Length: 212
Image (cartoon, rainbow, N blue to C red):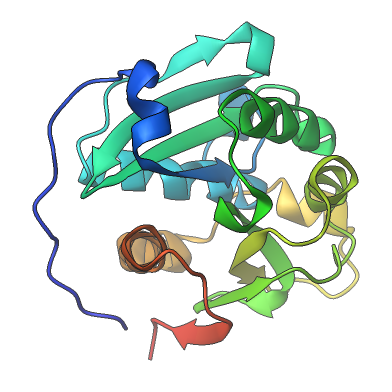
């Protein structure tokens, strides 16, 4: 588990007219809008950036209908960090990511998507640049609208409880009580990865295990 000391952060509110004077990154959390999807495995991307926003004192989420997302922005060090949660539902997530990146002129290498990965065991987080969608429709949409060269923070939600269970049903189910008990550790680790990306400007390919 990565241990790091949080650096001092500016406390200014959203001021989009200053974007051109600062480094800017975009972090896209994948999930489905609606209370029925809260705390499901497929919404771990939303949970991760909600936690990151809370930890780093971001202002409240604003619905940006023209960008098809909920958005919040904050300065961390000398970097403007824009977080979005697409409101298009998972399969069309790329529409929100493309619109936001175009509006704020954010290059592909400064974009990271956070999402669930069925083929990775719960307790592991993997990062990389580019790669296949591995059957994830939200990632397919991102790649269709952005290209392949964005960063991926993949949070393991597997394996399926029952091997014969339909994958779509499994990802839309809730975590077990044992996994819920580990959720804070997981979200602290995704915080660490995202903070390292913000401060360092790069996302390195690696695997982290946060549960022994």
